[in-house]
Image (cartoon, rainbow, N blue to C red; front, top):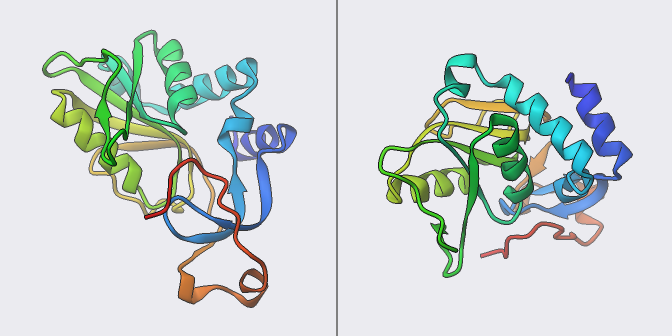
Length: 194
């Protein structure tokens, strides 16, 4: 899938939003990608996962034992990536503020894991998820996401394969352009701000 095809999937599901948004990273943006909407259709979610799996180098694909994603945003794409790669998929969640495996999910020592996200902006959630996976005995050999909002600048500490790179500008509180500063921010994501 090319970038325009991926964006067409977001537009078709009304998942590409415009306005003033406060991202889970704490930064502001005039654009928000609501991946839950693009993934709510199982056929579309499957197509996107197959396209994302095809972005992984063959030698990486054949090594993956498990897929792990962070809850909430990564759960659906993580499950679909497990299906596309024909491996088990599970997720980490934050019951007490830090990611951990729960619900009986376990990694075997040395399991080679693909960590999958929906959208990566600063990489904070991804790095936290990778840390939790490693604490549970897994070895993260690569990361993937539907969208890299960093414009290719994010470093997750492992090879990273996004389906598309989108460089919508983001702003710190003290950098807001006048048109964003003039409207209240909406927080559409799942993570509570610190």
